[in-house]
Amino acid sequence: MSSASNVSKITELIDKLESKRILPKSELTEIISGHTPETDEYLFTKARAVRERIYGKDVYMRGLIEFTNYCKNDCLYCGIRRSAKGAERYRLAEEQIIKCCETGYKLGFRTFVLQGGEDGFYTDDKIVSIVSGIKEKFPDCAVTLSIGEKSRESYEKYRKAGADRYLLRHETANSEHYSRLHPKELTLANRMKCLADLKELGFQTGCGFMVQSPYQTAENLAEDLLFIHNFQPHMVGIGPFIPHHDTPFSNEKKGSLEMTLLLLGMIRLMLPSVLLPATTALGTIHPNGREKGILAGANVVMPNLSPKDVRKKYLLYDNKICTGDEAAECIACLGKRMESIGYRLVTDKGDYKE
Ligand code: 5AD
Ligand code: FES
Picture 1 (tube, protein in one colour):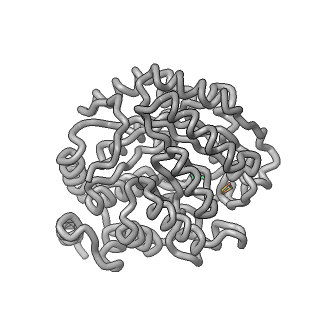
Picture 2: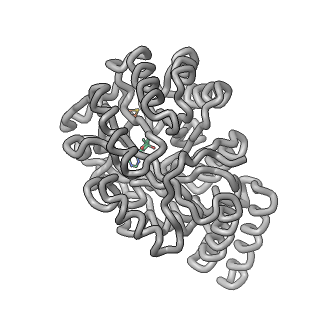
Picture 3: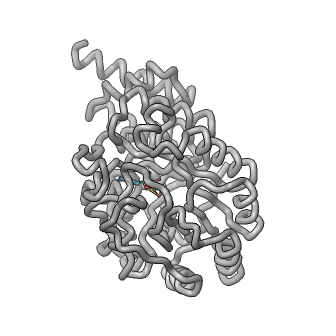
């Protein structure tokens, strides 16, 4: 195909994605494999218009509290997997977590995201106590949990304790691909079951995946988009895969900025109301990664609110940014960055808008 006719084919598919909110797998794959800088600009302009129709120029912020880097799992990509012997492990006490929220509240955060490895030390009772403690002290704030696969009963307890949202990336919607990224105890079927439970229990639910993780094909990405369309999540977290030195994937290639931005734009067209973060991983692979993410259709940022001394220990991948502008203390810098691209960081719970 000549490049002019490729561009017009891809822009036609982008129009169709916008009006139908989904395309057949072959056409999603065609966009993913055939996009160019020119078609990307076309997509991002549309994606911004869609997000501005619903969320205006507001960018929501979430305070990320990484409260434990112990993990019983052994995902091949992850720097805090149980076999990563180099990881210096830590756990935050309930009082430390509450302190982080106090700091965050003063800075304008109205959502706290508690993220951690799958760590049996935090029993359901402990999680319930932490969640209800935060909700009691900060009734005007949302609590998001991101603590992995649990039983439906456990999720129900968290929900009753007041947790509002739950993030559980599906990682890849292709079960063969899933099994190349995870040890055999972890299955895509169980991940999907957890996601279905979370949604049924009334959580604002987030799924998501890594972009260009090892063995991922363009078809696999199309399958991720089809899954997202079927699941209709409230939030979608995506970021480039980045190798970690202490994992089996240490020598694999990292995901690209371009591919991540493309997928953010496509997801915005598919789910106009979705809460879509420009992630830390995106900020890690490019100095202006998060701004570019916002300009591609994202509407959320998640600065690090963890105590400073643990931030470098919660290392899912190498070179993670966590002490500069992306950290919660430098919310003013982040605000300026957003203003420089015509958006504004807001003090708001930032709930999903129907
Ligand atoms: N590169 C990028 N993202 C990663 N995650 C875990 N390890 C990596 C890595 N090496 C992502 C996973 C997980 C989320 C918390 O972080 O998608 O769900
Ligand atoms: Fe902890 Fe994957 S290594 S959940």
